[in-house]
Image 1 (cartoon, rainbow, N blue to C red):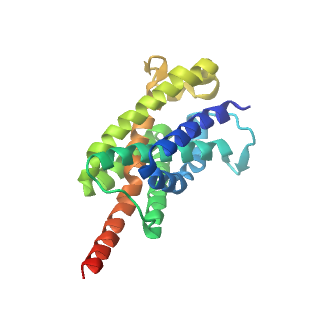
Image 2: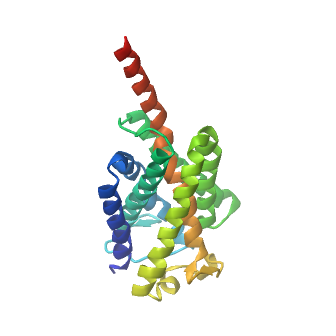
Image 3: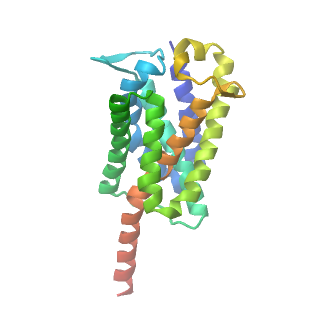
Length: 242
């Protein structure tokens, strides 16, 4: 009953550790978590049908849509983790610290998350693809076709952050979750949705999902809020010089 909660709290714990350690990345971490946390519960509308069936502490069901608070906790923590790691790498590469909250940029990040879900649903509905393949494709389409093409300076830190997050996901399964619950993959996951390929016992699909999700969630806030922040900073500098 508490298995999924334990997994979600693992990532929330990492979120708090990173939040405490990277002071200059705290704002984008929090903004990303709040902007993208909704994608967890909403995506379950499709994932519960053909990918996995976790057990919730308190299941919420609205028609065919089933989700739980664990979905939001995981998505909140995962999005912030991706954003924090990416922001740290971006600043080390010479990009400026994000200081100001931009309401329109925040809304833009929320809409990007919804766009991923819309593409996911369209691929499932029209092409009949598996929900995991659909969300991976959606992450890549948004990150590659919109974020990274329009902001090429984000490519290097985004790719590096994606690999780091993929390693974190592997460590989570290999060193923690599967140690506590060795039969969880056969109990929760739809075996037909998995290729059978593993990395040290961890399904490769979970690692690929983490990599593509981080490639999207990592740079999303800086893409949506960074330019407006730069413009405000430039305007202030011009006013000060006058």
